[in-house]
Length: 314
Image (cartoon, rainbow, N blue to C red; front, top):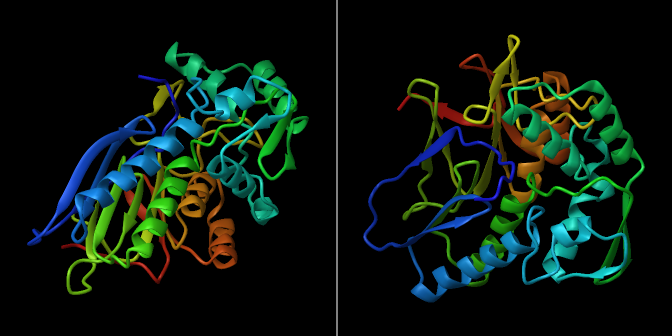
């Protein structure tokens, strides 16, 4: 298994039985993916799996694949022709729209790898390495040469781990919309979920793990979660995460977990990653800017919930 960094699941989906269901379980983005279609055909399941297979290959920053991907971009400073999907997700990740975010930087790949290697050895990454990696990030940029060609200039590495799953769900939703399907659920590792609606237009019920009997009632949205609940290392009285603060270089997060409900998979995933290291005041401000709703969890309790999210105890 590749040692790719993951957003961690804190939510599990609870569903009622349906008369008709086409479902499949696969493995993408180093996690399990469950696709449940309550209308449609087997060919629709196959089409969505093809979408996920391609985007998984394109966004891999650990291994070369049979397509020019992030790994290949990271390992050359020359022009490289890429697939339309990779070009689009890079455009989105480096867009000026995200300039208001302090805690998201798609160039944190090499810093994230250094932290992962250090924590695997039960060591805190030294300040000299952190400073060096931040300097690399600040001196690296991605050039969009033309409509299918990019060039990375600098030594920092691109990491789309905070984007790939949400972007794949965006593409899956585009496909389902083209078929005019409404009843479906796609769960990628429990950290990136696309909800349609149940038959009859009812909400899905989503259990928030580690919180006693707490459920989110929602439909027709993306649910994105960032958390260190299962991928954390405790050293010297601190909890270190796989989610890195790209400003300070620290692996200690501001919050234990953040859940974001949005109308965009890629954006929801980016914002949940960013919000884990933002103050509550900043989160509330960014919610308004990006038209999303969020829940913040600290010490096993909800410390903030947007009033537009319905949370029940059953």
